[in-house]
Image (cartoon, rainbow, N blue to C red; front, side, top):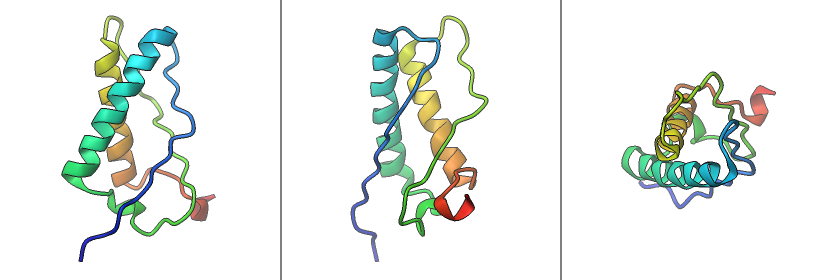
Length: 95
């Protein structure tokens, strides 16, 4: 049995230290990569039972000086996806 469609809303995605134009590019790369991971790998198992808002913080991620905004966005998407998969995301039941 396959799951129905899901909606993921990201209220705020912040790339501290990037200029506005670079942050916009990083954000677009994030969306493309996160969508790709969801399509390729599926919904992280940690999210399967969550029906309310989930708060995810990708903590400790640092881009290196000179990293392209596209790379930063993709790396943050991967860190977020795998953090959720490992159960590091905090849902309302964890609060």
